[in-house]
View 1 (cartoon, rainbow, N blue to C red):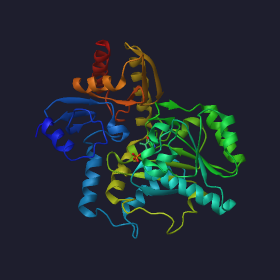
View 2 (view 1 turned 135 degrees about the horizontal axis):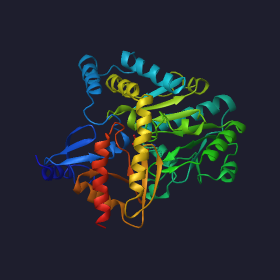
View 3 (view 1 turned 90 degrees about the horizontal axis):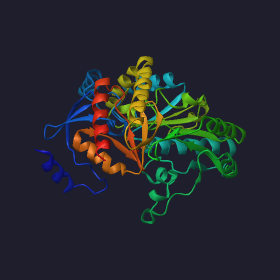
View 4 (view 1 turned 45 degrees about the horizontal axis):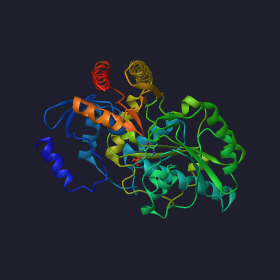
Length: 392
Ligand SMILES: *Cc1c(COP(=O)(O)O)cnc(C)c1O
């Protein structure tokens, strides 16, 4: 089938929840994709920060194929070797003692909220259930994580009622946070770099002050690293840039390299409270996803992390010099491009036509390339972006 037929077939059946670009993708290698009509695309998106190892990674494909042929699922009533291996690996690498395995970022954040409330209940009694999040944040699309998301535009009346138990404060405003952090609060949840909100890195001093306030008032600090995690910013997790360790950390997107996976990490005293029956997930810890995630974690070593930092600086430098670019911000290979008034969505659509997949966030262009993208692929993608911008 050609792309027109694929698009018509999908549009005839899907709920119209997405404004798709006009592209149907059939295969990929590295950070280069092939469309249904035989055209080539450079991928600056990883499918929204998911395909860390790009396309066709032989070790990952072998690991999941082997696991699928042996045992695809067994449920959390039993143990599976790849699940055990991944749980040990991720806790060792991050220094958190406990992990809950699930299937998406929203589920990881649901677990974080429950874990924080349980900890407050066990240690302070009832009545400390409010979670403070930041204005402009994004935490997911389930009702709880949508409520946690501090964006009015994502809270239309049609989905009401939203959940009680959330409060919002502006990022960087310690006075507002101190005022909001009353006795009903159990946790503060932040993204170290707001992704969907427009690639907004948190100020380091602010993050340190949030940690101090959490310690003073016995609140847990939750980092939503669903987008910033798994090497994206040049560290395994972005909290390492800040020198401030959260009590709970959530991860998803890049950890599965395309298979659905999410996780909620917690330090021992916090994770230990989530006892048998408190939480669960049918697919969580799926052996196939875990076998693949073990490969992902092993490949994100110091050499790759340094390369992500190098490639990120190069992208930033090259893009900063392009026509219509006002600012490039972000960390590592999580970058936002502020344009001088051009419509980012229209620019992204033009890039797709010319063979470059690129994301937007609010009014910005956004880049989340596969972590393994080559210098040659980067240059080909930059060439397309430069040409599209120069034509405006
Ligand atoms: C994408 C994202 C989520 C939601 O993840 P899903 O897997 O789509 O549920 C949550 N938080 C952040 C920071 C994200 O970028």
